[in-house]
Amino acid sequence: MLRWIYPITCELCHEVSERSLCPDCLARLERVPRPICLYCGAPLQQTPAAPAHCEACSGKPRPFDLARSALVSTEETMELVYKLKYHHAAWLAGGLAPALADLLVHTPALTAMSEAALVPVPVTRKHLNSRGYNQAEELARALGKLVQLPVIRALQRDDTDHDSQTRLSARQRQLNAYRAFQPTPDYTSGKHPLPPQLILVDDVFTSGATARACSRALRQLPGVKEIAVITLIRILQR
Image 1 (cartoon, rainbow, N blue to C red):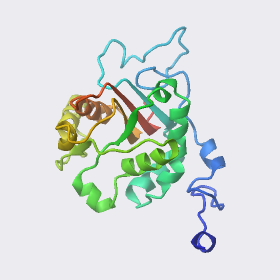
Image 2 (tube, helix red, strand yellow; image 1 turned 30 degrees about the horizontal axis):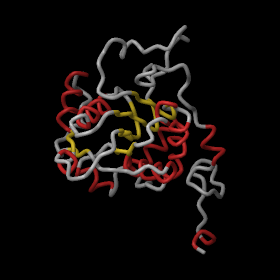
Image 3 (cartoon, rainbow, N blue to C red; image 1 turned 90 degrees about the vertical axis):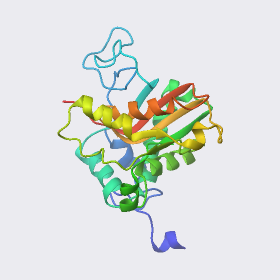
């Protein structure tokens, strides 16, 4: 009855839809172009003759096994994420989650993680209180329903303001990120069992500092063997 009185409409075309983004509008959002770095998922400038890594990843140890993003940063996709994060539009997560689900289905290394759980990147208590929700957790829960994977809060974030970092160097931003994220004590102590595979979920991948810091914290948890990172949007470095 409520759906009949207040039908769901697509955020982009405003037609009646089952989700906050209709299949046609979701399909036309720009995907991350191939070829990509097999480690961090960044688009490569030239087609390699063999599987390759980008310059930033070549020969460098990383705390996660692979990272992939569904969409590239365009004016349209960033506006959707901005609404999700700052305009109390948590309902957008349900419309965007199928893009992440496609990523899982069409990435063999992710499909092979059959014993995985989804771990949303946590936000500070200040942001949680101001927004009323964690946008990464909303995405993870919507994705979990689509692909039948559990969502666990295996990470926590302190309330120190690590977000105002625009004047800091890349090294300082990375150190701040490492200090910000810690494994949740219940999982560290073994009170709650963990699957051997964890998939970190976030809205945006920019420099990878957050993904590395969270993955480094997850490596401290007992029994964790594989860590993947999936994000809705990849910020392309121009």
